[in-house]
Length: 358
Image: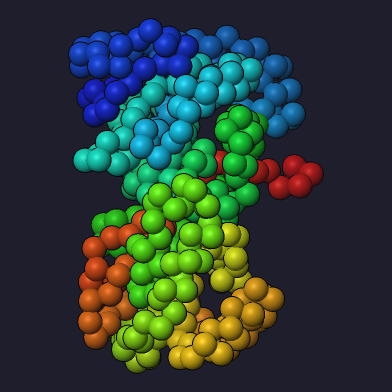
């Protein structure tokens, strides 16, 4: 277990001590971390071997040190969520977690690294897709497990792995569920675990109003999509691994580690999050009829969908004839002409439901 290296950049507190000042000095933060780690070691050592074996047989895991990273802007009713998290961890015999909040300047990666340095073995992330993606950047390449507590509109990672939206149920998934190591995509130093895209998909995400999403949820994306159906197609050059470049006219290019979009729509039927490769979907509808045909094929899960080409590679370079909106896991990044992607195989451990019967 790692020992503390530096105080977290964010407010921290244990859920068990609501009166702990989250603006405490760095020295107090270090003491808090040491106590969390030391108490966890003591609690783990105190569990009899037969009890631990019985717990594993029943699907429970031994008590582990944890941290919670929350986006206070995107998450509503934080006190209620804290109580739910604390209650479920206590019921499983796990210690109270370190609590870290994101900020505009530090959206999650720094807090995730701080949690790892503090000795956390499971990091709960409560926020939208952008918060989850940022935390993935801080956890990728470690042995620390990510546990998603869905709180945003899209919840792409949770949707793709069957993570429940209820906070208490999602916590139980970490204490009693399974683990799966998955690949992490890399886009010039920025990580993603679900999908990256350039063109139409990023434009509709960028144009979906945060206020509207808060009111009507996923239909906000549909309204945004309608506004961009007539956008001009782009000329793209796509290089896959060491193959010769391909040239296409496209509305959008989506690169996926997994297959489901917002609303649970499965775009990439053969995407696997642990095969060391990414699926590349080139969508090229030109008319309204093309869009309807494409959408029907996707919704009906046809193997071959008109106006959509599917490829696969471990290294992808997409270059457009002009600047395009771009996104990573539903998080819109700076527009640009190029999207360069690669794969970090098995870089992230994720808390997931156990297979049926396991």
